[in-house]
Length: 315
Image (cartoon, rainbow, N blue to C red; front, side, top):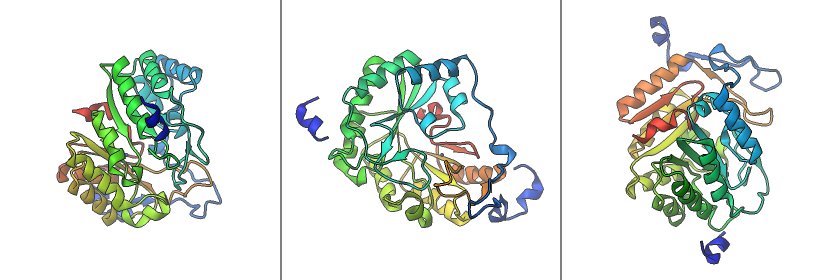
């Protein structure tokens, strides 16, 4: 890497089917966020256990690694880690954006760690990860928005872990195609960028992001020949049934191959409140709709997150 480059520095029964989807939700009693919401049984998870989980947890702590599994309090951490899949978060753990749904810290990021690509690659080797998902905080403070570290990280992983498959869950990079090209050139098996929510709620949920810009990024990836593109949507933020269908339609129009739909869970009282807990059968309905649109893979359920079952999305 040159000095110049461095300076560029996600049908329970027939009776349910008779009820409109928009009415088949459980409304939290604390829409004003003043009392604790009791989560329905279908989104309660067991504490992660097992030898593989314990080993990975130890390595993450030992090498001070940033994983979205831990930083984002993912409910599937035990399941994914036990299957040899993990999501690494690069470019620090402080984001320049302040999205209302995200549990990652917001503020002034630390300096870029140019040894991070090698550290992540070495960690994947030590952890014997079969499929790695790489994501990052937004680094709008950098001229290259962190894309050089992105490409160097993928190259380092390829060099030390030739059998490990990769998904890169990228920011929108403000729609800068020259920057997006850096990710395309290193050719991860899957390139993902999350729409996160429906058009109407984007300004409230994502603040600095734009609905159409995300669609443009996903469209550009396909235009440039990326084999597998992926996106995710959270539910329970106040979206309407027709708006979810519209978002799925929009993603297919730009030839996205894989989509995930999951329940939004409030990281803290400072974040956007959950407006509804979507029932499992609604997720099944959305899954069926998405599959009928032509998505190659659809993960739809209360506990689904962007990286859920990610290893099977490479085919």
